[in-house]
Amino acid sequence: MAGPTDRRTVILHHAADLFASKGIVATTVREIADAVGILSGSLYHHFKSKDEMVSAIVTSYLDDLAVRYDQVMAAGHDPRTELTELVRGSLAVIEAHPHATEIYQNSGAYLASLAGYDHIRVAAHSIQKTWITVLEAGGETGAFRDDIPPRVLYRMLRDALWLSVRWLKPTSDYPMSRFADDFVSTFLDGIVPRTPEHHYGTVQE
Image (cartoon, rainbow, N blue to C red; front, side, top):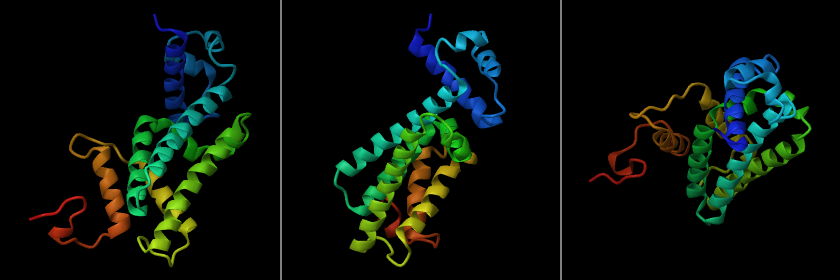
């Protein structure tokens, strides 16, 4: 029999699936309970409200991103490597929290109404600050273009990266790790053909 922690995880998994597919407002507690296979009243033994479920889903997602980013920044790499690792870390978290990613992107106004929004806001600000810091460092060292404001570059990268959850379906032939490498090389090297000796990540003989 699943323990309380396991049951909470199951509830959040089904709730996130419904929130992402139907929208938070349109999803009822009864639908979540039905998806889990329990009575609606039993849901309240684990969560006080639907809003608490939403907050738990998004907070877990943002906290995982923050942990990944802290690890990247603590390693002390050059800006290009840091950017590469931010992309890889972001996509790993997106893969682990696909529904949370979509909920966060689609439900900004709703999230702002939550009691736990302060934590979400602070986490989101920290995540943005990390990207800006890396992009500013890259511009200063010559690793990145310095004629585009870092905040503009950040928004370009952010939307391309996080909105990929809407269309990207990784497969064994094209896994998320491959997409991460292609994403970085496209933004940093462009879409013009590359010579074999400059193939991203390898040196061809």
